[in-house]
Length: 444
Figure 1 (cartoon, rainbow, N blue to C red):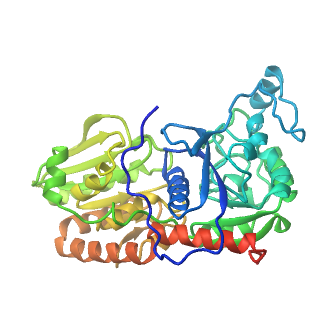
Figure 2: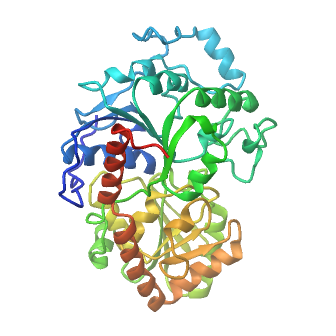
Figure 3: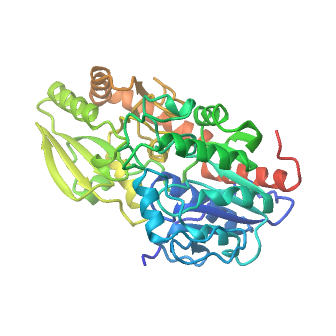
C-alpha cells in the first residue's frame, strides 16, 4: 500500500468555531484517483484538521491513512444489515450484467454506517459508479441519517454514462443508446430500464444535493424526482492555493529536464491522451498549427497522467508521464509550462483547470460543462467552441505567440483562483451547510 506523501493539511480560512463537533462519513470511489476523488479526500482531511470526526469510506484504498476505510466489494459476502437484499448468485449477476443492467451487486454498501468509529451524524456521497457501490441502499440510508450527495458528473441522471455528450435522451428516459461504449460501458442496451430503476431509487430517497457548478446543479434539478431533493446548492470545488502557486519556472524545467528555450503546453489528464473525455484530435491539430506558426521554435507538449513515453506530432515533441506521488511534483509540472490546454469532449468542473490557474498558468479550454464558470474568457484564459478545431488552434497559437498576453492572463488567473477557488473556503462552506442541516435549517 502506498504511503501518502507529506501534504500540507487544509488550514481553515477563519478560526471562528462551528457550533458543534460533527461526525461525518464521506463515501468516494478511491482515496487517490482523479479530480473528484481528490476533492473528497481533501474535504475529509480538512474536516479532521478543523476538529471534526471525519472518515472516508472508499471502494479502492491505495494510501495508508487509518481514517480511510475500505468499503467491502465482496459480491458474495452477505451484509449484516437485515434490510439488505441477499447477495445475488454468480449466475444471476452474470445474466444481469450481460443484459446491460448497471452493477449494484455490492452488499458491503449496506454496512456503510458501521465503518466509522462512531455512528455518523451525516453521510456525504460523492461519485457512486465504477464497481463498488449498491445504489439500492440509498432509500434505506436516507431514513437513518441525513445524506448529502455531491455530483461530479451526470451518471445519476442517465441510463449508464457519466457524460451523455450530445445525446439528450437522458432527459426523457434513455433507451436506444447511441453509444454504449461511453464510460461506464454496457454490453447491451438496457439504458431505459437502468434510467427507470435510478428514478425509482432516487424517488424513494431524500437527500441534500450539491454540485460544483450551476451547470450541473441545473441539469440535476431538471432531471431528478423533485421530492427526492431536500435542498440543492452550488459549492465550487477548490484547490490548495498555497501548494499550487506560481514558482520558479527555470527550476521546474530543470527538475523534469524540460528545455529552457522550448515553448511548452501542458495537459494534465487521468489516463493521459487515452482519457475518453479529452478531445485529442482538436489538441493535436491545435499544437501542430501553433508549431507551424512559431517555427523554428521548439514546441513541447507535456502530458501528465498517462504512460511514460515520448513521441512526436510532426515537429511537436510529446512527452507523457504518470502522475507524480511527490507532493510538490504536480505543482512544478504546471510551473514548467507556458500554457495549460484542456480541450474536452465533456467535463464538469475539472480540478486540473483550478490547479493550473492557481499556479498562474493561462488556460485555453473548451467551453463545455462548468468550465465557463471557472475561466473568465479573455481575462484569465481563452474559451473555444466544442469541436471547433480552427478556433482552438487560433486560440492556442495566440497564447503561445504573445508573451505579454500570457503574463496578463496568468496574473488574472491566479487572482481568480485565490478569490473563488480556495479549498479552505470550500471546506468551510460544506461544514457550515452540514451544521445547518443538522440544526434542521438545511432545507430550501
